[in-house]
Amino acid sequence: ILWKDFLVNPDAQRIREIIGYALIVGLFFALMPVVITISTFTELDTLSEYFPSLVAPIENNSTLAAIWEGIMGTLALTLAMSFLPTMLVIIFSRFFILKAQAWLQLKVQ
Image (cartoon, helix red, strand yellow):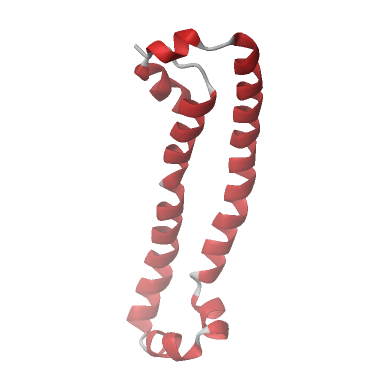
């Protein structure tokens, strides 16, 4: 039980909820460019334009190039997406009334 959430002023809470919903919408709109940028910059063609000396050894070895193309994009995207639940927990715990800790998990899901 989160006792501090029982003592919240209802008028102030309405403003906090509006800010919280705005942050959630902003999070999803901010996440899309991050995902597109990550998927673009993990491709060997894009990297060879910016860092040709680093990409040359990978491109010369077809096995290493296939491993790079298959793993790095997925790895970078998974890393970026792993921050989404953490950001949602921060938003929900700061801006919404959660009278029990289990409600936080329910909100994130």
